[in-house]
Length: 404
Ligand SMILES: *Cc1c(COP(=O)(O)O)cnc(C)c1O
Image 1 (spheres, rainbow, N blue to C red):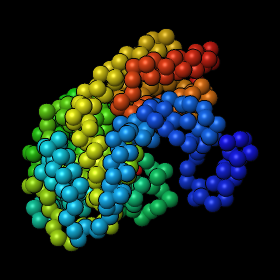
Image 2 (cartoon, rainbow, N blue to C red):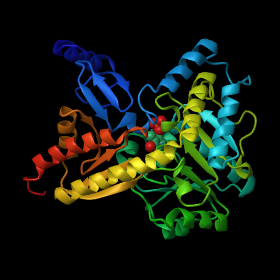
Image 3 (cartoon, helix red, strand yellow):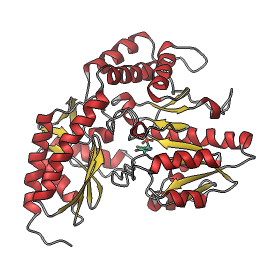
């Protein structure tokens, strides 16, 4: 595509698309593995991966084959009927997570919404009408009204008041704050095991185990939003598996379809409160989405992709650490598995992103002072080396500037 065409697209987008997204000046046309190409056939290493979505890489052949096969066979039936893909994906996810039941939907926000409904119903039945859910500062749970209420970002909420009742906010990674906020009205704690949009914040090792103990003691539900941290991202299938505990309910989406939209919540039997007619979705659980979800999950289990993500994550973290050692501007490297970020001593993440993009690397300016990197879990060491070279050169160009 020539520049005129790129400009036309930008103008048409501006004219016809609701302007909620600040886009980068690039039109992507195809992808394979960790790489994507723009309309001028320029190649990029994709260390954003559709925001932690393209878990097996772009256009993974098994995923493409599953889509082709299932698209020819049966795409959607409504939930009035049994279909094999939904049932077998439910079983596989329960076996992989230690949960008992699955409900399928289409996105992360919808999965969280389902968790909230489950908790409210459970509170009515089992906890004398308790309905309050404790959530964290800095949290991100999606963009529906309930999800922005649960989320910690004021600018996502302010234009849309009145919000939903029944959410109580506490600082993240502070178990005492949760204990103090718990009352007879509390029904659940909803938390991300690693906060993604807050800039990849990993809590202390004791946090989730202590939260598990507290939820048991107080008789409330532990709900984990594994939408970004789940499906192998942190080096285990689900982030809580690092800590030898199990939550009561989890929300999953992003990596589950490796690019195909699908979400789910998984619940333990004791709090599987939703009965006939109490929740539903037209598209959720459809055979096409579930066949893809099954293919991705099965591939991850068969090839131990979470372990591969753990190894690649360690490798990349070491490389980032050596960048931090050499560039004063980098003040911290943090994350778990292939869920990584660097903190900067000045708000230049947008500039770094632009320069990386120019040099053929896609990263994410999750905060003005933080860069997030969430490549496909199948990323190779060579690709990590190349990405780190590009980042190294970009950081070198910024070293001379004074900290702000
Ligand atoms: C992305 C994300 C969501 C929202 O998912 P959508 O598919 O965009 O609705 C919810 N929770 C977490 C932790 C996320 O990272």
